[in-house]
Length: 411
Image 1 (tube, rainbow, N blue to C red):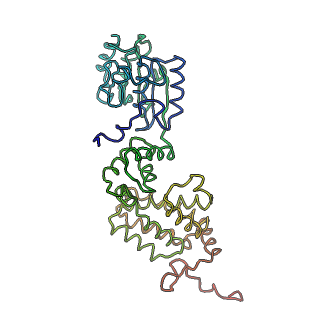
Image 2 (cartoon, helix red, strand yellow):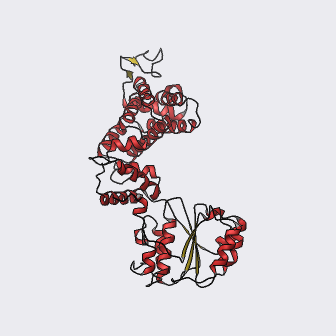
Image 3 (spheres, one colour):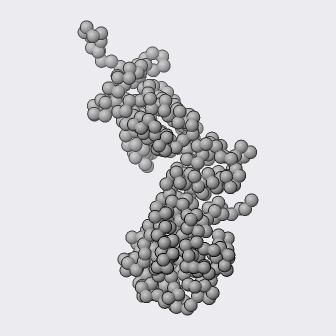
């Protein structure tokens, strides 16, 4: 097995292999078919979404012996040089602007740019992290980018296109890349795992997609770490949850059920288990907010699973559907709002445990607040007729009736 990183081992070699960027790859391929290729391009977007990879593919398409073509042949010398594990081409120069963004570097590039390509159709400069080029460096490049010789092409790649000076931007074709949708990324990771011949349990891929945040490279790095630590049973859900730092599902189930029944003892026992287990309270609150979000969607859209709005293992989905059924809509919405506010307050908190306990107390005590959402949550509980007695028969905090609650004929 190769020790090469997963994201390098499966780096796309053609536009057809680039996922989630059809709004960029389709127009580029059409421009190559029509032979209407610009002299300068600007690829922008979040990290790990395919900017530099697409720049290399475009260089491969331009210098292919059959080209310019949207589908490189893969057999000519230029295609082999620019392949995934190829030696590289002397006519395709990649520059890291983070370390070569000064005016002297720009002058050196400008002087070399006028020399024709050694063996290819075009000399192509791929300038990565283009936002790191200084204003003086961009100004030194301006003339050659504006009126380059016929053999010269520029491709700028950056995560911050607004930092590329306007005079350069106006002379390029700008293609904005986007984060990859979760469904597309999950299917791609499933294909990679199948090629690696390592079994992966249900529910692992959604965790990886969530950890990657829509970045293919970040998701592939996380998947690589899980595959590297896989045992005979492959990558298990428990292993992925533990390694990625996500909260154990049983803890989330316990605290959600405690919220639903108004059981303060159970809720604070979960808090104690979170702290004693060495879990990060902020991560626990973030995961709890994610769970409440899923429950809100399940309560509002009963067939949310079929529509792909929620992605989780079957057993977790069954538990969430049961949990959504015991919450009122207003009560669930209030809990999610309070947890969201608490998550914001936890930034820089000196006592995260205290903050976590306060969040639980606020959710459990709608009677202590006079705002509209707390009133609606109390009405939800009354309508559902939930018994809020805690364990030994004592009423849960905040739900003790007022002295005259049973006075009168209604009692």
